[in-house]
Length: 116
Length: 115
Image 1 (cartoon, each protein chain N blue to C red):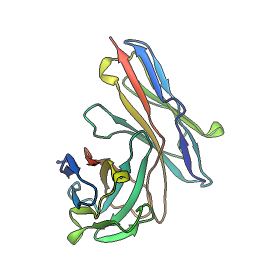
Image 2 (cartoon, chains in turn orange, purple):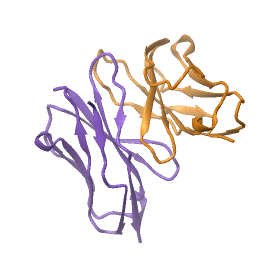
Image 3 (cartoon, each protein chain N blue to C red):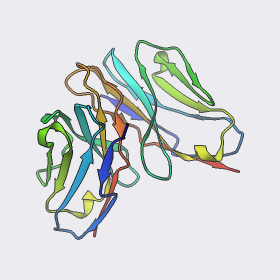
Image 4 (cartoon, one colour):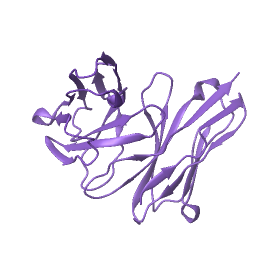
């Protein structure tokens, strides 16, 4: 069974540009999460999809970040326009659907974003 | 407040030594879940263990063992007879049932095992 995949693995862009990160969850997983780790700090939650719906987006830093999950399958996270402080590693995770039970989240390899 | 504290930023040991990584958590909920993840140099987060708040039994998996103590709000992780391949950053995390089960992570402990 394939794990969570993320694309690209690395992205280097200039301030003001747009970047789109993609995440493909484990097949059949209804829950999809985005997290971010800024250099040296803890991994922080960004948002949670259940199928195609946003269940919790309380961690999204500002309106420059837009997440979508088309048809409840893969998800994209767009940063527009990117700022220097957006640099970090963006992780995606998925878990199977269990009603209100915190099931194990399986993580992808992350996308390292560098904004110059 | 919900919080996870990993006070050890970095630990260095020599191969075959035992090492314990500390994790202290804060939560007001009675039902919660604790996790450990490993991040090797390749960067991915690898799931190690999930434990719910009603199960205080210690767990052993090969050279890995976990000690969950609700009385001290701790969920410590011990590696016995460490190996170079254990070198990684280890994260402890907390989540809850309900509306959202987002993970709350500690800042991680970098473990370096030298030959």
